[in-house]
Length: 222
Length: 331
Image (cartoon, rainbow over the protein chains, first blue to last red):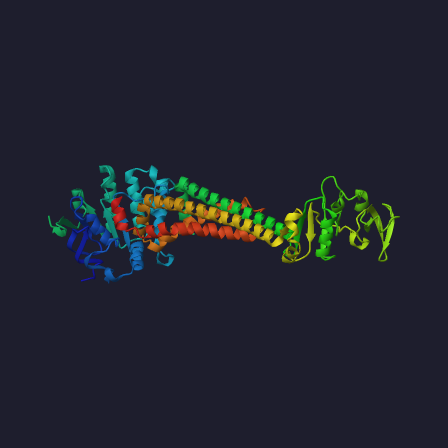
């Protein structure tokens, strides 16, 4: 069996003495389409942040491509975030005064030149239907367009793992469908996708569904 | 280059904040430039003042008319050849020499101004020693001819009342008897005359001390003003950067999520502060370019930019410590 891309073993995380993650076990293999399902506040975002190396567990083991993330220096964690992990946020987290293209290119800012495996930004924007609007500031875009910019930014460095936190949480059904199609295309390239959502419509997309129960993940087999 | 472009785009998207920082930097540098200019001018004026009061000399102020008794006393006590005297006012002839003409006012000697201004050796004589002497005539003394300026009734030896030739280029000051003796020496010789004979000895060292103290006061005042301005600027900059960091918390968290190290965030804020303040500082100093010397310009540039960077350091460190996960969640 191949080494999993990500491996979590008995991961715990608490905030102000409230246990949010209470012994999470999870393995992510290339090509996985994982949906983390649960109500707001159940720990989905916390788990995504742990997977994205934005946070550290209080206890437990977290490995990325076999490397123990607990012993990695902050610089190494930053390098992994920059080069290997793409993140899509519910709130988009775009720089509103920057143009579409500048927001996408922001991804390159922290990747050393010799380590860049960059998709063509223009090609990516064409694929996502944003090429014509590439010079516009993102503050004038619709929610769906903003989410597509966010996805373009996440995909620019051809990540090994794509994490998405409620990617359609702020979108209407039409935009949600187009975003979902995009995720299908990404997953078809064998990039593992982890989506945290409370929207059951993502179940069709998933190859594996996990439900949060008291800070633990329970795999849903229906 | 990417970092620079990133910063420029950021400025374009936050024009008000960028202009506020630039304005503040401009004001600070202009204030420092003005302060340095004042300091420079005061230093020059102090130097001029000090050079007018040589440390090895004293000035004796005489309230005219000086009577013959006082004059003789001075002659006796202050060795000949060691002092110069001049007495001038707007409607009296001026001379620069060993003896002030005013000393003889009221003593029957008249001194035509045009004769004095020729610059030839002149003499005042007493009628008792030279009964035939006439104003305008010549007197032979020690192998040199002196033009007789006046004939008086003072019983003074001629050799003692020979005014010397005016010295071209010497700055003549009214009512001053400049005595080229160490101040302490003069003081010792005339101290008993001061009160009784309306005579005042100006101690140069005291004058110099006074001038230096005045300069020090200006320097201290400017230093205090600079300190107050620097503190105000620090408070303003701190609140400016704190508010910037609050507003841009999610941006920094986003950058962290894209792989920025804490040092990248810190450096970005410091670079923004450096670029945002250096250009206005140069502009602010440009206002005083004519008045300041290059060293002062360099000094002001370093001081202002350094101070702004120092003020930005704490907020930059705070921004670098923002936990990205929590900041993104908070949004």
